[in-house]
Image 1: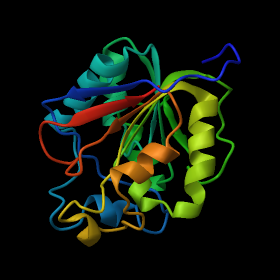
Image 2: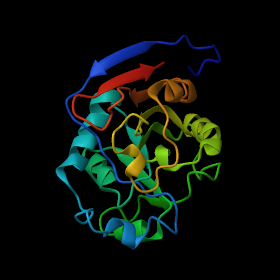
Image 3: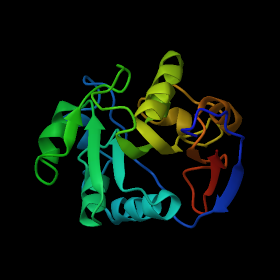
Image 4: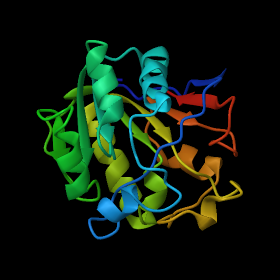
Length: 210
């Protein structure tokens, strides 16, 4: 709420049909060219899932402005812009910044999400979108990141890998694997969270903490 009153928690569960799975890039030394072009990655490109993510953002939140934190090459940003949304991507990767120049040259900001404040005004965006990124961040940074997400946006959409996900502990760079209850206590009000324990599978349950 923006009227100074303490908001009451409003929990809504929504069963969705599309899984949102996002590659992650947070450390300059780890998430550069070799990460995106490694064996098994099949070359990072504009897959159909990026358009589906943009559609999902619009279905859940109907924002007019979006910041995609951990945006990689900015494909979701591109699809949002095509829908007439003011969208910006933020990522720490220098290589991702270079590749993003091909389709969002004016809408990419290179910044490490662990470093606050971000270079944006208070409530500059209707929505912060952050998917498949926070599990790559050390626990000590999460409170300040959530505070910053709440400062710069009215609402958020967050998806992370939970510790119960069968492959979560094997994926590169995962340093923070918690259960959904832990994340629910750490996200700010006004946030959508992909809530079921196998959150990288189909038929997601989205919980809104409001």
